[in-house]
Image: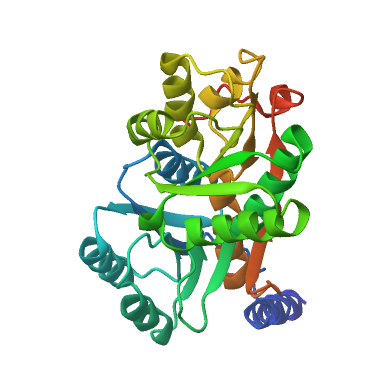
Length: 323
């Protein structure tokens, strides 16, 4: 009898072990419900800080990566030029990155990014467009920023007047698209508007210096189409120092907290910003993760433009924002 019971127990144990060997643990990569702790490896390439907006890109990229730390491992690299970014891209490939979020501010990144794609790495291009097949892209709508700026300006000053366009040729497609949207729209809705174009840069120092010179050359200006909040801060300082009261609208772009706070303080000038938030990079990180998970993701994700002025600026104040 004892031998029979022992035999039954042995057979039951064998069946149990066999059944266990045939089952698979749940795939919990990126989850918390199982024992598999495998994480996706995502690298992030950003420019070194040359502008408050750029600094905020790295900040938000890391913030989102930390929020996803249960699902991803990440490395963030910042670079001063295309050569350094290329070297860092190679480092991320050696590290084993499965996806790379790249913010390529310089020409010459096409070949390195293609190399990564050819190696099977998913690449999400943030903001500046790069001509490489196979990349995913997340960006704001630069051209629509110009369209919205033109509509806003005409609403505030009417269909005639003198408008200074502050172009930034060194920013490549960013300024090209913003200017195109503005000029094309003005030509349709206010063809008699006088447009004068000057070159500057995306810094308050250049905005101040260049616009001070512009003011001496133009005794009457009705509005300023500036493409960047930091440039606009310099413009407003130049207007104040010159004692000018003819300018009724100054636009901007980016979403700078300091600029938002200036909006209600300037009662005689409508200060506007076409929101192009650096926080969009969070969406780029999310796209990288979704692609690695095999989810269906659009190749191009364009974030719509939002206009901020003294009527709604309180809705966009963020004490934790670095920009």
